[in-house]
Length: 551
Image (cartoon, rainbow, N blue to C red; front, top):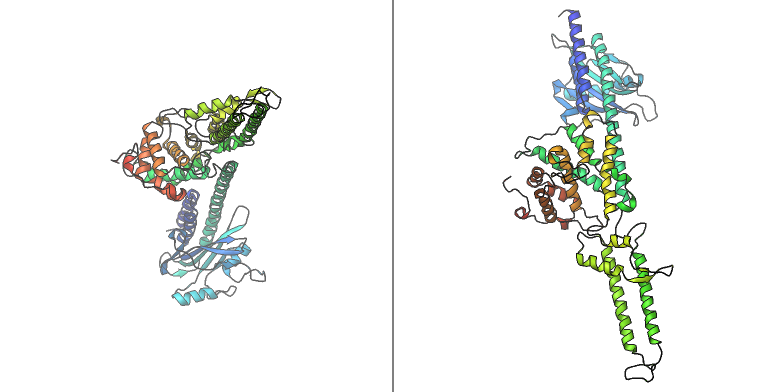
């Protein structure tokens, strides 16, 4: 091939390599591509790619390849490299210019050595020892530093034993070889730096998300961990859908980018709770605001008991009768009856106080009989601090104490539910890149229902992505099994799956995803990781509503 045509061919090859470098996203694959491209354009039998660690002041072996010895370590090979890092400075802090690869870094210069056994300027003791041990003959060396856009050395390409294209004999690296590898090293450094910057930005972004979630979880000891458990369960179910080989979802697939997008959506699904007031998020009892107002009721009961005692003493001190009768006191007053009435009243007040304390604790279902009793107690008359006779319980206290489920009033539940609207507003305001553009939609749908009765948008199944429907099941199952709620213990697997099955039959959750959740035993994988031992009971799937025994 004529010289000009050969040069054009190699430049074309270099250009194709540059395109490939810009398209590679995985760091290990990128490093592999860099070294293999350098070896290919120079026909080098061996090569090593080092990365510079400026903090430790060393060069780390990242990829080692020698074709004639079948050596392949690091990179995508997965074979670990057992070599110690190369020290750029000795113990006294003196630069190590004796080793050629170190000199290339320290001087930021390419070092091209035709024959290592004739070189006088560098120490090749280690190379000779390697050759003696393996029978290899390390002859020609080309060491090219990889510098980033700021001129800092981020790594070194070391190529060994260039081979003549015609005869295969070991020859020195030519000036053309050096120039092409220097050009490749420059492109590679840019590609590697860009990939590192992207990784750092992605890491920073995920850390920021985690910061938000930690702030949300720290607002309440009763929901701590929810923001981390839901995304984990979301990914467990999504991966189960990906691997399922039967049913309507058997063709569903996710790329790594798809998985990352869904994971981020899971991490951000409750980010709007950052604006939810603490006294609502962290409401452990029905009467709790800045403090538990049950203490105020205790004080009122003491007032009623005091009033009862005063009434008794006044009765005992009533005017004397003309003559004492049998069983009466000196004044003719039936002391036993008065004291019995007083003691009965005290017992009733103590019982009512314990009853209200019981009502103050959130439950999953408050009986109607308890509601009626609260309303009866509410109308007990007592004298307030201003001396006025008023009802024992205020309207607000009655509303809170008669909450049927949990600890939140209707208004407080609306405040909690508003978090999803805030989540949507926050997420839709961000300039998402193309590969994350679905995050707002995925995160916004976990309170929607398949029948359109969910919130905030009342979407139906056909209006939602599969990923959003996956997140809906994950959010529900985590809430059912959570053992850190103030008003309930974590449910067992059987109890949770029974409710989830009823949700399937009631049009609340996606039926196909429920089938996968059961068939792939996602619930069990989650249980072993997050549930307490006493929650992991033996599940009889034949008794779980909605379970399709045929799939």
